Amino acid sequence: MWVCRDPEATFLGMPGSVTVRSGGNVVVAIAVWLFCAVALVDGILRGTPGYIVHVTLVVAAVSLAGWIVFFRPRLIVADEGLTMINLVRTYHIPFGSLQSWKVGGTMQAEFRLEGDRIQKATSWGAPGVRRQRPALSAVMGRNRGPIPTPGTAGMANADLRSVTELAVEHREREWQRAHPHGEETVARRTWNWLPVALLVVLILARVAVG
Image (cartoon, rainbow, N blue to C red; front, side):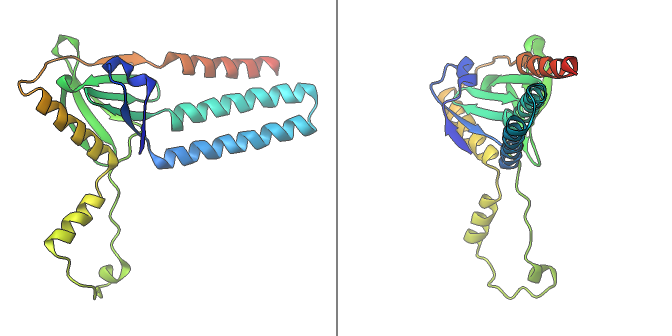
């Protein structure tokens, strides 16, 4: 989990926010970018000018695709609500419009749009709940360890909770304390057209140069 100031949460009017991303997605994005960097350097050192142009366009498209698919999707949790950034859509969800949410393998939320329409969305980038893997001795029936006390069992369960769940739960609770009578608002959706359009342009440019 990263704690940072995220410019894409400015619609909430908050100076700061908590941003959560999937660690696995970040690792994949970094691996893609490293591969692209090596391919670009190799193309520059060994290729002809025409080949360098081809490699540059391919590397740019793959790098941008890695950013769109793996690094950009995330959940921003601010004091007044959530910003759920997915591949092609972004959802701005004030707590006053949030109907319900849950974190399992992914984070899902139901919220109210204009016209009292209810929509459900799944976060592509927020970490889900970690799976508990029992020890091999416990699976084989030879768990000789001490029996956990109620207190330690509670701590173990808390360790399995997703950072997404902890972040949303804390901010929503604080918002409810500040708004004891509630505050009905509506969420809004926007299309992430600019990065997708740029990716299309790079692909078409690669096809055009042959």
